[in-house]
Image 1 (spheres, rainbow, N blue to C red):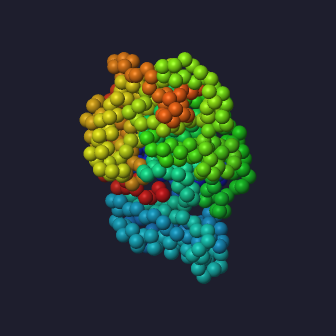
Image 2: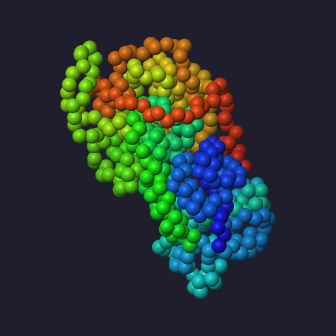
Image 3: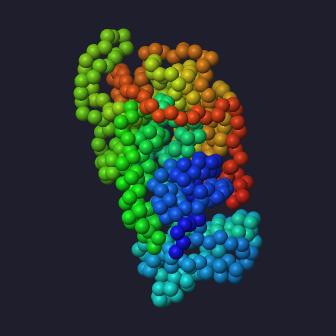
Length: 480
């Protein structure tokens, strides 16, 4: 068996560079990138590290074979020559779950799917001395992509998509994928030394992904992967890396990460999901959905608008946790003692949560964020191509990125210091754990980790989109 494998990380179209940088940060050699895919070379240990640590990739697959073929016989023979027994153990079935072909002579996807399945099954049946492979129980997932007559046959080692971290049981009406949330956080230029706020937090995905980054929590540390069922599995390596990553989690930083929503059910879901993420970071199981995401009550100093500070018993969050509160977007404002910060948000999509006119009305009301958060950078992901006209300002950068089956756009606005501090001084603090009706402020510290800022200046970053890409794929279902 080879000690190293060629592998492919699937990701949202538009996030390839982020995944490539993640792999390089892990010390993994990147071979090349294409639309929604990053090819890399890795040892078995680094395959585990990729599974545990990649925040933006949707799947990791081993590229078991790569060869040119312009006819079915050549495609079949080469697929059967792969030493599948070095990956797939006896007693395991096989399914070819995805087939994609583009600009190739072999363009009948159903025939490709059937012939690859037969080639793999024939090889395994002969090796293990059986007449047929099982159709239930554990199943190896194979995927086939043919681009310009180049056949790539891949074996999934992820199992469930990597965006399934294990913390989000309550997803809300139109949840943002965890991997997409991580992508827009990194593409926005946010680093954990900066405050971060999401005024449309929903189930809390953006804020929780930011908190996981601030904690140094590997996103896959609390889940299992399909590689565990394959011949190449190494339980010792898996246990060692998981233990190492859990030991790296750091709750000592006082973070400034918050989210709010006008829907009480969404806020409760965000709080419960946050506690699950924290439980996974500690190496435990996800906590029940009904658990309240607050610390025991204690006496703290709070400030009520128009009154002197008083001592009252309130339920306060721990300083390492993101705060979620019930608060309409229109009532939000930057805390008085904060300088620069980031708003990263996923406002309602017209075609997913109502009609387009309702979404456009929300975008117009979002203009108040410019005056309430004048020193803050704003990153908005939406499917609306005319967001800027409704928001009232041209973005400094625009990038196309897929969110599941939806083509979306990430609009990034640099801070608007020319507006000045025109926000209302008594507006609710977005980092308070208390809901709007409480009228209270809770202050926590700020993390000290430094990072780089995103590039300034308007840029159109649309070179890697699903529209007209070399495989014609739009990031819809092949990463699921």
